[in-house]
Length: 362
Image (cartoon, rainbow, N blue to C red):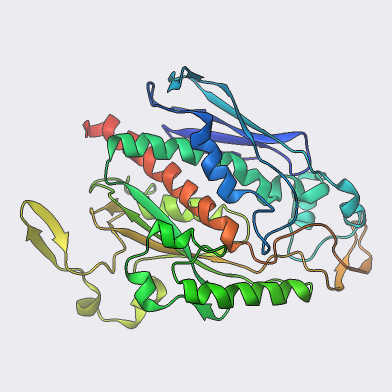
């Protein structure tokens, strides 16, 4: 079971949704990086459940404990262990799922693969596993900002079902605007309608999905390893490893197929001593290697699979049945997925930054 990511900056997450706790071990963090638990906690607070009226009501403080690898506020260069304890488990909400498979969940596929699964909360398939990723991503961000002063990663909700942030708001997204509303979109007016839609879905026992867009600024040219470890390929893998993701596109994405080559090409020009492109349909990556422009991509998240409406399913002994799910779940995963997307960017970029530095000394 692959629970690790990265080459030089390598993380391994562990723990189940309703176990004693979840966490991560980080290997490859350089020494003498300033780090304290508050750096990690700030990102975990953005991810945690129960933070607003449109998220799951599960009450978890998600308090991080640094177990190793840090002394007197500085990293040692040795493995960093982080633990977050689970305090609000309710296994009783999952008794029916012992036998009945929840539609579009990983219940059946985990049974098919392993012959055993953690029933409560979905075990490793739960979004609670992402706590370790977000914690490791917070540390990766510290490494990047100490080496790349212009580095910035901003993810935001672009659409929820049929409601889309305005084109004007997408032109220059800002962190303070994104964090000013509970949906985490860059368009405050669209946020109001998005909240209404999510609340309506919750009231019906249903759920909705949408698209998160991400802009990564300040990445120098040269990051990425052709042929198989292309930067966008690693970003795609990282994003599609997140729960509920169903699509990834970068730059012009699928819309680029409607253009001719002449229309699609990003022409180069010199900006003083810097090579730039006049357009950015490549999304900041060409030939699998960053070109110094903003990296822009989008990730599609499906509607939350848990709905409170009776559905047809089967049992683990092959009998037809019905199931009405219980438990505490997000009617829309996107607001809490924003920090997850950013964390995965940090993890991929820092790994490629360290690889580039080790290979050519940049």
